[in-house]
Figure 1 (cartoon, helix red, strand yellow):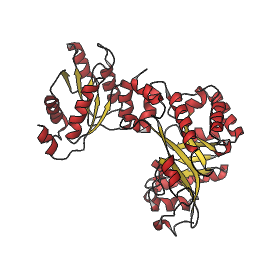
Figure 2: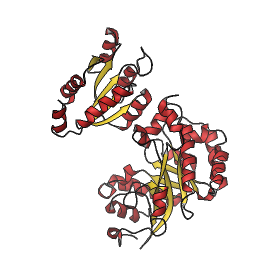
Figure 3: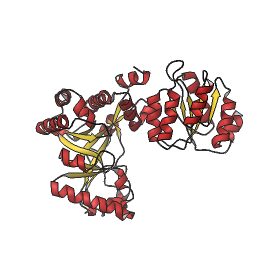
Figure 4: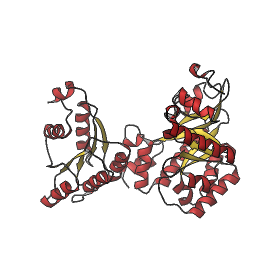
Length: 135
Length: 262
C-alpha cells in the first residue's frame, strides 16, 4: 500500500487531522503527507477551529475526545465545520464512542465513525472511498 | 494552560519579520515604514499568523500574544539601521483590554531606544466587542505621544467606515483584496478611487497592501495612492537579513516599473 501511495498519481487534496495523542498525529501526518496530501495537524479544539476558518479542507479526521476520556470536543469541531458550510468529508475516530455518540456524530455531519485503534491502511481505504486521491 | 499556548509564551518562539513599505517617486523609491509581522513556531500550524491569532483569540489570550509580538517587534526593530517608521499590528481588543496599554507600549519602545514618533499602530479588528470609550481614550493617549495610527485591512471585516469615522486615523492601509486585479475590475477601481478621495479630504496617507502586479500599481498611482507594500517591491524578512540587504539604504526600482510612475 505504501508503495502505491508513494508512487501513485499526484494529489493535492487538503487534510486536517485532529488528535491529542502526538504519536497518532505523527503517524497519520507522515502517512498522508507521503501519499501526496497537504496535511495540517491540530491537537486542540481551538487550534482545529482556527485552521478550519482559514483553510478549505477536503477531509477532516478527528478524534472524539481531545482532553479527557469521555470528552466530546470532536463533535464541536464537526459542528464548527458545518456551521461554516464546509463541504469537508469527516471521519470521526474514537476508542470510547457509544452507539449514542456515534449517532450524534453522524447527525452532526460526520461521514463515518471508526473505532480506534485502526490500521493506517484501513483509514486510508476510507479516505480513498470518501475523497479519492490515494492511487 | 495548553502546551501550544505555553509554547507561544516562551521567549523566541514567536518570531518577527519586517516588510518594507515604500513611497514611489518618479525615479526612485523611499522607505516609508517597516511593518513588523509575527510568525508562530516553525513547523506548527501557528506559523501562519492568521491561524495563530485566531487560536489565541479562542483561548482568550489575544492580548497576551499581541503584547509578546509587540515586545519582540520593538526588540528586533532596535537592531535595524536608520530611523524608519516601525509599524506594529495591535488588535482593538488589546487597546481596550490591556491595562495602561499606552504606558506599557511607550516604556517598551523607550527600552529599545525607539522614539514614539517612529511608531505606527495598525489597528486590526475581528468582531471582538471592545469598549468604545476606553478604545478612544487609548488612541488619544497614543496620538498625544506622537504615535501614528493606521487602520489595517481597510475594506474587509471590522476595518470599515465606522472604524475610520471613530478612529480618525492618519493612515489607511487598503486590504489586498481590493488591490489584486484592480486594473481589470472597474468595481475595485471605483472603491479605490473613493478611498483616495476620502484620504485626500481627511489629509490621510493611504498605503496599498499586497501589491504584486505592475498594472495594478499603475491604477493606484493614477489615483494618487503612492505608498506601497507587497512582493512587487520586497517580501518580509528577519531583521538581520533586512539589515544586511541594501533595501533600507538604496531601495531598488524594479526595471519593469521604471517610467510607469507619476
